[in-house]
Image (cartoon, rainbow, N blue to C red; front, side, top):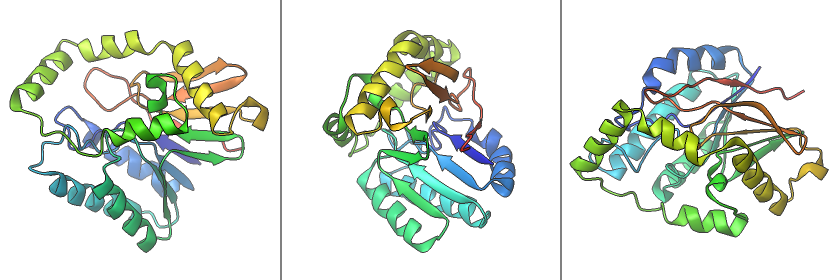
Length: 234
């Protein structure tokens, strides 16, 4: 079996990913492929004292998870909250030391399936646009306490869910992702059948656009739906 998860936002105060760790381990123990689809860690909203401390903790988490399942192949796709150069450098070192870990900066294509984080859905982007948008995230912001307090209030009021749904209508998201994929040579004409992505925090199950099915598992945050997606690699 093959699995895809994204938007765990580990180290953010709003993440409840720990509730799903047993399920992650269960799937990885029986699966042949496990794709970590970006924003697995959240360097922008981390509660740890520094970016360096968060990177250390992230690498420790990955090392424990991946070495616990040597028969499963893991792929890490970068997202907009975990594309920090310091983390990427350590992730590259980790992948060189573990034979069952590979990482990709933008997307992973396996047969007719393509997986990506999905931050290209923010607006119409090509490859250069995504690189430029990610570059703005290279230095994590040290959030003042009141930012975290406001975010907590928004979560308690379920405003984060309402906002995500309002700004990410399915058709618009699918159209923007397809526009990006066409710009990097992975359009419908290449035989693409399914796209798995995250970022929007809005679940999507087999939403069809231009004959391609789109899948999103949501996010591990209070008030939001989340699921480990089963990927059919044929």
